[in-house]
Image (cartoon, rainbow, N blue to C red):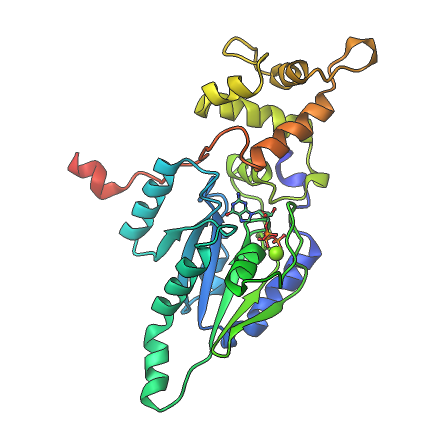
Length: 292
Ligand SMILES: Nc1nc2c(ncn2[C@@H]2O[C@H](COP(=O)(O)OP(=O)(O)OP(=O)(O)O)[C@@H](O)[C@H]2O)c(=O)[nH]1
Ligand SMILES: [Mg+2]
């Protein structure tokens, strides 16, 4: 990625952040979705300050696209950090049960305090996270019908939207939020791989070449299986051409159509068609290291 020069924090996100601040007092619990393929990169660091004092739950979403052992490792890591977390597949049937159970657990004390005063609390949960992690999909799944718009690109949800689930449970859908300053380049690139940054501001061929290089390290067999002309000997910088060759994407004059290949690689990775793969592992924990 081209360092800090890209405009990855468009104006609508600043507006969305203000919307969240204005509605915060209504919120009983914040459900934060991260992408299980990049749990570190896809956690918005601003949320700690934005949601100070709020009850919070972390959901490792799209866990169907990530490596199952890595999902377990991340959940174990969060548990040890005292973070309430679970893996989920927003698009799957059982997402509703998992999400409701977590919301109920996180708000049980508050609901009980109301009951003691003879009142029934209406629980309001905010569904938050970076763009394209599956927030609106989860809301639709919990509602049992299409109430919020979804799509395979970032920035689908534009404004706030309350969705009433029962007379005593309401969910607030919110636009995907990034943070103003691009940090670690490797992590930002992971967000671009996932499709959480607008592709129009990215150099897709460079991005796709990097993605192929990353996948060759993490899951070579699946990659070579998918793109038959790509192997361990393909030189760095020539990976995208090898994909174009595999798919017969050849332009007039025998030039490889790397632009088309780049699109295909990104689409196939994002849809989980190359492999179940996790790009980041939990940080090493001090206590464990000492125990060894
Ligand atoms: N495989 C898989 N795909 C999912 C899952 N959850 C969501 N998706 C897909 O991911 C894409 C993004 O989903 P959305 O629900 O629109 O994401 P969002 O977080 O609301 O995105 P913005 O509104 O743009 O911030 C869609 O194509 C969904 O079908 C999941 O758990 N697994
Ligand atoms: Mg949305």
